[in-house]
Length: 215
Image 1 (tube, helix red, strand yellow):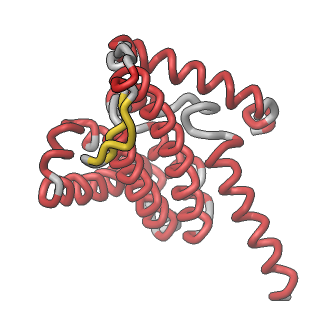
Image 2 (cartoon, helix red, strand yellow):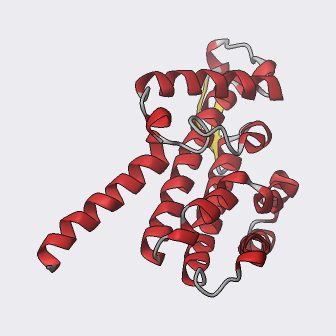
């Protein structure tokens, strides 16, 4: 029995990862978490930390919701899920303030707003509440990684095109300004995030035409 169940379990986890990362990606397919695309993708540093925050929160929230799914009364289910999510958001926010104050100031209230992020609440309500803990954690990690990849891609385009250079955690990777490049300040502002996000959605969905339709 274990020989037959192991490949099936691996296949299930592979499907979960494929769904979260590209097939029904939270941003490009489900169009969730768009506010953070506009707010924190002006720099790659911010996008990386924000992505890490969401992976941490969504994975642990999914785990706890799944563990408690049979004990949570139906009438207070969503309130309980919000309380669980808020707990992990506060933990990450306090950690960031204690060990990376400058990054905490740059992200401002956006880490705290993960509490209201539709991706986290959606996975808790749509997946974790109905599935065992291990699957719930895998689902959270997959969706968090899918979200993070898109955030980082948007930030790469905005920082390179907008600022003419790429600086990651204080280290300059390259600069186009040395070659006479003129900064495109539109990409530093919110409209640049709109254009980049829309273009990225179009490209990725063109390669993944059936992902959202099947779901």
